Figure 1 (cartoon, rainbow, N blue to C red):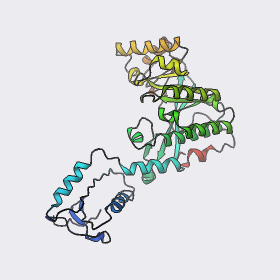
Figure 2: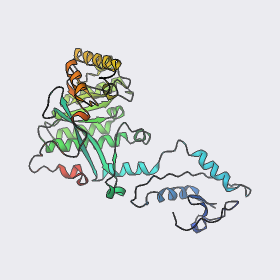
Figure 3: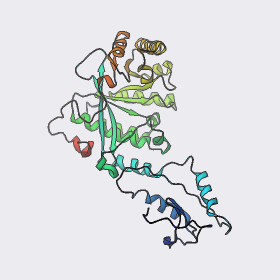
Figure 4: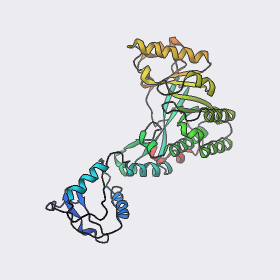
Length: 356
């Protein structure tokens, strides 16, 4: 915080008042103690705000905080510090939540595209999956990116999954409107499938852009348990009524059974890459993936194999009847569109000038 040499370590916390922060007790280069006369809650917020104003250099920050009501004058500063350390586990970083909330509504958010090819074919992608990234404004000079993902545990802890999902929808629809003939898929979490606000948003966007729904694929992540199968089935039916297709993402890693797939009426199953990446070397993975492809075909469901790394894996998948492949073999996510935008398209501002 300050380049000055640290003050001598006191034996007890020195006295300060909430209106006089200059009496801060510095116990080390990054260890501070206040003895506040009042308003400890307000000062907690002010301490947190200090971490929002760190200059643009890239670094990791963290802090712990503890308060003791009416402590005895005999309490040593070490006791307060120990209490702060004990309270640390389980806390959620405040600064990260602030950044995600701000960035999803700011013009620094865009989609990157990763191709999905017909298995065994070359040339152009059959469709493209959109991945959302944001430009961290405090590290813009370093072009540091933060990927927003439903798979990120922090996003779930902070209750931001639905916020991110809604922003993804807006960006993908803007891209579809600007690129006629392109098919895009987007991920949403199971929680979002029963979110009335998200449904109202997609219905409004589809009505505002006739014909786009037929080029949209919505992926429901399978790594999180679907909370209510009946609710999700209703969502799938309503979305398919608009003309969109439904895919189950990361199939094989979560809780969805083939019985659920049949009940939900999904169009596409994406096989979890953890089972695909080693199919050349692992007999168990080969048997598992081949069985999934065969069962899906019998149910009339298209299959996508994720994390395809090499030609040998792609050939096996093609031989087994897998419909599409996705992964390093055909290219990673990129900001560069593999198609031209329609003349006069206004999607650039919606996608974020920071991506250009």
